[in-house]
Length: 369
Image 1: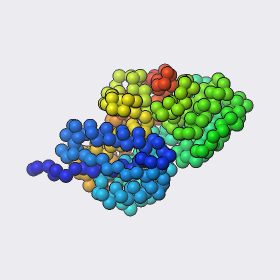
Image 2: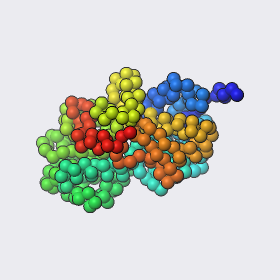
Image 3: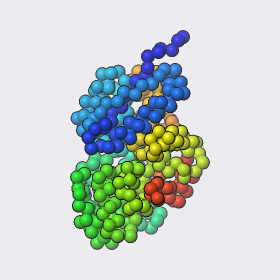
Image 4: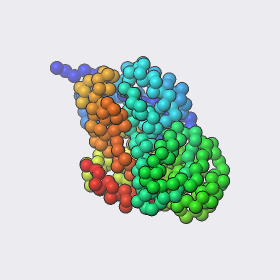
């Protein structure tokens, strides 16, 4: 029987305008995934089209964009990387019944589980645990923490990490909250210096990440500065410049592609990084990786279920095992995140690039397929 000729529509909510510059990177990753799918014959022998809606970096903008995509009849939606906006969308998924694969990293998107909500980045809980493992392995038991209280992801990631400190033998000797529009990081850095910390943990993204890193270096602090996924972007390295050298960052596996042990995962990473760098002139950021991975997961679910009807996509997602550049996802009805702590790489910035730390290389050598 002849396959239907009409395309499979995959929607995307992302920030094409407003303060969330990561949205453009998110779109770039999704576009590359769609191009590769079509070059390989499409999905269910049908062409895939990406339908993008701008959320204007606003929570209500994301809600409105999701409804517009549902009205268009998309099979599923790639969600925004702006966690504050993604969280606003979640209640509407129950009404519109379109799978929403968020590229934001707040773990409360999937805890508790919602039937139609999944996510691509490692959750803040996983990143928090992996960085505490790194601290413990290096004997860094006294840390000073800086977190962006305006960011849902960073606020929740720190709140989660705080509950884990005891089990890893780590103590927070100073905790400093900043705002998304904070400009003067001098007092924050002074508090870190006065606390006698062995390392500083930064749960910051965008301008606060840049401001903290520059102030940290200007103050001449010699302790390690460690950052969560929010700093895992070439844009962060470009903005901080040479002062970024030596900063330790939790990253996706893609960010350290050239350092990964040989594995099927490294092959999957290469399928993204080579074409992306050729097209954009820079390696893909975490946000680009998430956009790419979300499309690949949705496509794999449609193939597995043999149907692009929204509820068929949901059912297939809940039993999907899929190897991607971010690791191998194992979704279940009770786990809509799919990854584990070992899918988080710990890198150090050297000469403008993310390089895998020896500790993380050893962990991944045992873990990757």
